[in-house]
Length: 598
Image 1 (tube, rainbow, N blue to C red):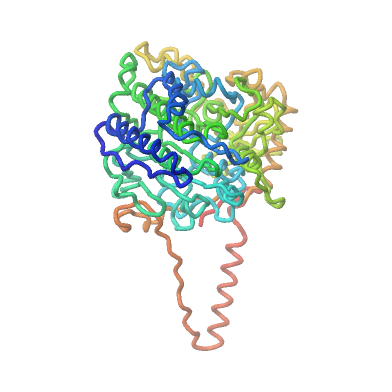
Image 2 (image 1 turned 90 degrees about the vertical axis):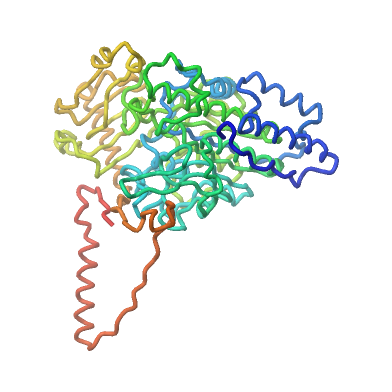
């Protein structure tokens, strides 16, 4: 909440608090309101050293003591940052201060061989379904606001599976998995409550988004309706944190809860409250300075979420997972150094993410996990921790990696299909011949098998962008790092364990390994479903929906007119049959790769 912004009423006393604790709760409410008025949202100080005050307050009777009858199912807290670069955390050497993330990671397990997808929608879809993009039809790009598209409704989502075993499920933040139909909304996909945005980005204060000239609308929702009451110029990072605190304050910690907190930060537009710029005046690059301020605000927000977990009795039985959804964007202030590439690419800088697990339930705390972990793994891992069941007929791409993370065992994962995108811009120099007759290397794809990583087609922007490029020293070194893709290449092979920065292409030295990985790509492609990437629908314009981005699609049923005679009816039936045969022939399927144009 911006300084001076009006604070909402304090959360009511939870139903599970007995009469003996009402006095303590009254004192807590007073402290809560005072804190809101003073700081704009619940903030027990910016320094992590103040965390120790929580237990002292509990002993003095100022806050309710944690429940002693906890559920055997852990509270699951998944925090997803947006566009945070690999280097942009203190423990990776960043100049940006992230004391909360550093402390939580140091006391938990750092994931240093952890992968996500290169852009927003794909990472979110794989987290919530446990499936690769090729198995949901979301192989290409993101879901655009104007597209009649969303996460396929026949996929059982993570919150739906958690609800089956008694979890209360809440989402706060960015959805970006489609909303053209009401059935696509978060509350219809397993969440008891939703507070956040439907689109991929928007103004942090006004919560408005323009997708193109004349296509602008409000994008802040409370469950299934526009949250106009929150149109108060509140900075989204702080507003979302306040909502998380309210959810925790009103929930019984003896009952399991799943909180999916998908912050908008640090995605563009680059906006942050003024006080967070104070420590970064020495950063000359304005985008980097704004980005640093946004990340500092996010770090403080996560501190406040952690404190709320402790205050309301959740922490000791909680598992906190932190992840970025993709790599950073250097042109928007993010840094992936020393990794190659950026957001939107299949180089390591686009898909290798900041990630860690923090929990009192971990067996080996303060460790580093270098085993292979992918964002699809959270689906089976969290369902298993929740004592849930995964149907045998569901073909998941994720693995249960809890023992890998908690106990340091070997990961059950030996490969990752980063993606196969059949409609991305084809590589001019790619061909079946370059792929040894196994694979058309014009197609954008990337796969990791044990130590080896193979890329084909056009992997995207491939520079290394060192920290100096953000300073006043000039881009000289950056230019020296640049690599041109106009060298006739369409296949790359790297030993990522030995060469995590992808500087030595081994495709010519090890053609046998290239062939093995191309065959694995071909095997994966045989299981792919057609791409879902429909054209823009003009009915999506917020002007037609009260100025709000939201569901617009309605099934239209046309009454059939009776045919005048049998001959005409027969002729019409014949034409329909021919159209169905033509549509079912999939003329856009070549070499087992299908395009969806519906």
